[in-house]
Amino acid sequence: EPEVTQTPSHQVTQMGQEVILRCVPISNHLYFYWYRQILGQKVEFLVSFYNNEISEKSEIFDDQFSVERPDGSNFTLKIRSTKLEDSAMYFCASRRQGGGDGYTFGSGTRLTVV
Amino acid sequence: EDQVTQSPEALRLQEGESSSLNCSYTVSGLRGLFWYRQDPGKGPEFLFTLYSAGEEKEKERLKATLTKKESFLHITAPKPEDSATYLCAVQRSSNTGKLIFGQGTTLQVKP
Image (tube, rainbow over all chains, first blue to last red; front, side, top):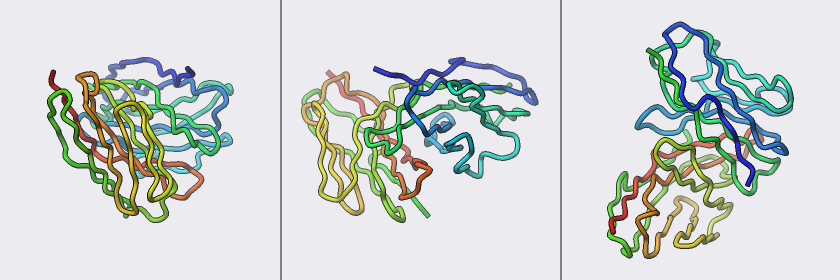
């Protein structure tokens, strides 16, 4: 069964450092997403990406965040200057056009900012 | 404002003891309601999508139903392997496909 692959599974970084979280969506999917889940809280939408541009972003997704699909297969989330409150699980998701069978989520990257 | 509320927050069942999880939602223009299962430290795993009131879907011991204001996930004769957090999410009628999640119901099934 096709999977969304995320790397690394766990990343520890110092406050103020830049991090890049990587995702390989399912190959025939067209819509890509990043969500995050702070420990014990809801899964929160960050950004959606379609046709090589951001289609919607949340209030959380400020100037410190950016996304890119550099080579047609990878989908990355960059946090320019990490803060303690960025510590969370970050999930990548993708869906086909229409998405009738639901979005497929990756297994996540646990980001710990120290 | 769009909102998804799940109840109860936690549920403990004995193996074989059937029950239901509730998801109440307020959204302007529902395109779809999704149920996911999430195991600790893992990503959400897709279970069902429901699109219109009256719709029902089943998978093994799980059955999801939808009304205009809420959805239920019925678990019949649960087994310990059904223990997980069950997430409900809604999608508005927009092309971006953003999902709005509830806080989840953590189910524990004891043998």
